[in-house]
Image (cartoon, rainbow, N blue to C red; front, side, top):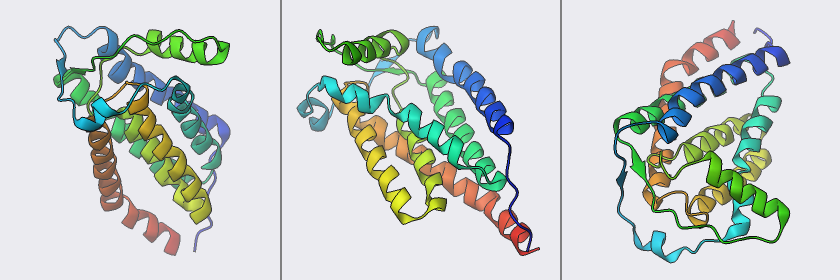
Length: 211
């Protein structure tokens, strides 16, 4: 049985830089510069019932930390590469929707906030993220993939990340950034990518570990 190989921080940082470049191409460009006219999706009762809750912007933007924590914790090369493949898979599938079927959300004006941190976070979201690129939610898909990768560290770690992710999913509604349909779409994309990863790569990993 071959002992697992670790990957260097430089390797992980390089992959992260490559991912951010692809993210700019597949998310940022259609978010601001795509010429196609985006369409609005149906608002369900849950979309109308959930109010705008300003403090949940802190939860909404915490998804970036989920990715960073996963990148730091996944030092074993096979597991990190699996995480990377799934992240790119979600990015490519969601990006295809953003270019081919752009959607937009009727985002309301954000209320003024007196707390400097909350106000800064809300302003960041308003400026850095237009109300486009809604379906499927890449926010949900990428967070779900990062959380799924935490299963390697035991049930408690997976449970902690799962609860964190559920809060992030809910915050996409309470910040009025996404439709409920977007959450379902993001989870469907994640499920598809995980299924493909298991189908195409898991047998190979098992065979290597048995050598």
